[in-house]
Image (cartoon, rainbow, N blue to C red; front, side):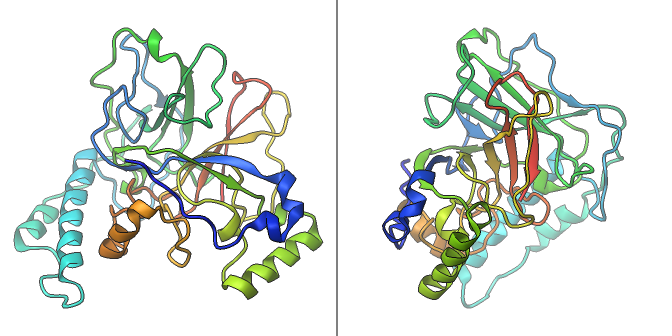
Length: 336
């Protein structure tokens, strides 16, 4: 299904011509729950992975566990089915609140869940994204490839994020697909298990956030956005949610150099991973096709605002960056 982002409430270039040369195209992926196959572009779906190629494992020693008990993938899926059923009941019952909460049978199922032991040794990575050039016009694959595959370790690491692995390949070169890839025996948090989603890509224009601009211009934009629309300028200029390319929505930190570890070149955003498809207080990023569903579902987890069910460190975005000079150089990652 097509997804169409409404126009922003103002033509930014008309009001601030200085932004025109800085315009950059981003591709919103608009993931929505589905049943993707290994041949589909997806978030959290199965990968077109060669049967004769080893599956990626995280071999780092430090797999941090927090106050939340470890979970198996089966338990994550059970919890989500029950949460979704409860959410639908509560959305239908709103505002009477009649029938809210879990049923007796659902509570009994939840009580049977026992946390698994912490896994030892390498941990099988989980698919985060598979993006084909035919579905994502903003993708710029290396020569001879047309498919991007991203996986991550379902544990938080020292930088506060899951460690990621990035692969480029030619879809036509995969003769036999690995149908039952390894799965981790445990995950540190259900928020690191992406719900399988199909994508519905759409290109939009973005502009840099004020910290990346000349100071006087950035200050003018910030004051103007609050005065005219009551929101931060960043919510007008940069699309939220899963996307390819575009700008970084700086907020946790000021902009800082993110250099290629191989050659020292400034890296560029490849993929932004985010569990939130739009802001609660800014509706112009909600596609026309999702506006009625957003009103019906409200904040229900698994609804159109949070279809992938992931959350990176308190609902931040994890940005995978690559070197523009060589796709063979190691990628970097950052959080904002």
